[in-house]
Image 1 (cartoon, rainbow, N blue to C red):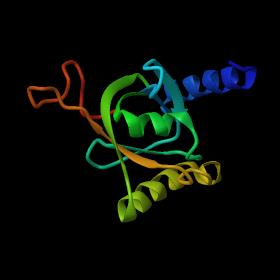
Image 2: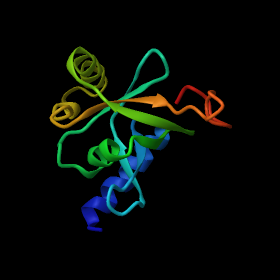
Image 3: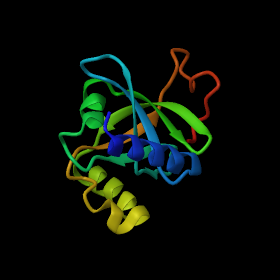
Length: 135
């Protein structure tokens, strides 16, 4: 891992701890290993989280497309979600919310896939044990 990657992860973890960014943990599509990536986000009215990639070639969106189960940490909260790629007006609505939150810093967000993350349900049909619906 290069020094710029290490610095970006450190800063991303600090921003996630403050609630200004999220850390998304995906499963590597080839390695099967957990991969953590800081990303910008916006919250939807129903407990969902919207995230978008600045590049289609980035590993984390490709991992989510291959395996939509993920964990997300925002502030002190960490929960399980299922990712769904957005298209059409839903995609535009999510992008508008992310761009409104981050302004110019989020200009590239949306050149790659955009996702809605919905709270993962347990087999019993409720939110996973020990989890809340709000991140």
